[in-house]
Image 1 (cartoon, rainbow, N blue to C red):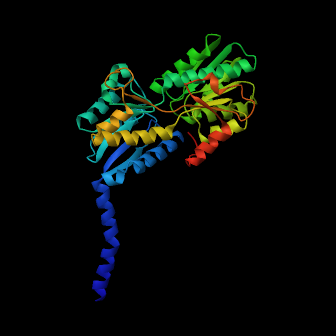
Image 2 (cartoon, rainbow, N blue to C red):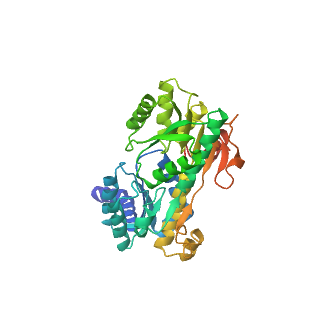
Image 3 (cartoon, rainbow, N blue to C red):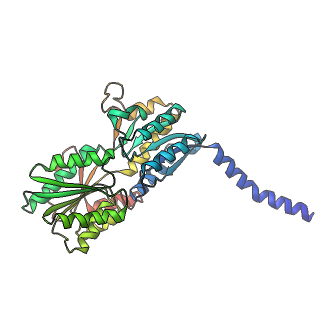
Length: 361
């Protein structure tokens, strides 16, 4: 009896584990592959998880899975190869680290040949060369985002009676689609009176990001603005201007809203942030990939109503942009951006994040 009792106890203990393993092996994964590791992706992960709940992944036998890349293109290629060899992968969304990398495009095509749904989100492949490597793109119109950032910078500088001068743009990879378009858009919108002195890549390394700011300030002592293009560039700039005693001496204009960047803006170290909506990117990527795997054409058409007759932008789902301004005395006004973006005060933006249980965007 004692032995039978022990066997029953062991069986009861192992049964839940067996059920868990069975469920784990039975589900199909919807995977989001990042370009690196940043708090930006925390908001995207939350959006993806909320999308999985909203669109009932569990009932459909799907699981949401975020794969964090190491900040290298090789890392993305290796992960794509691994995903292609895993039978439970049904769909992949990728933030392409280098838009022009043919090897990444080849791996995406290989996934599609295996019947895996493939989209880009946050950062696309080069659409002229590799549009066939993915079905759709979800994310910011990065050229427009750069123009919004450039217009905001010009307003800030002119409010200080600065009519000309040099600026440096800081970013992880200058070859990434989102980086290139944002920087080009910024340069166009700020105008020819302000000179782009340099574009400084940091290879997605935060220590190099800070060193780049120090180098720029040493090599170009007459700069009027520092521009952060990827999310961690804003805290890097804030750290260095604090270290150098330059708070308020240069305009600091940044993209994205990491938790530390939000804090630094509250301390007066950042003049304006153009915030994307990674939460929306994660949510809509989950929605789209599930629809693609299930061949739910009605849901796909609702997201991309012009896909058949607009070959240039019909496969792009544009997510939201916000211009985050100081709570008081900001020279930036909502009407300056019309349909490009919505202005929001820092306090209201923090409340918006809190409602969604987010710390950044």
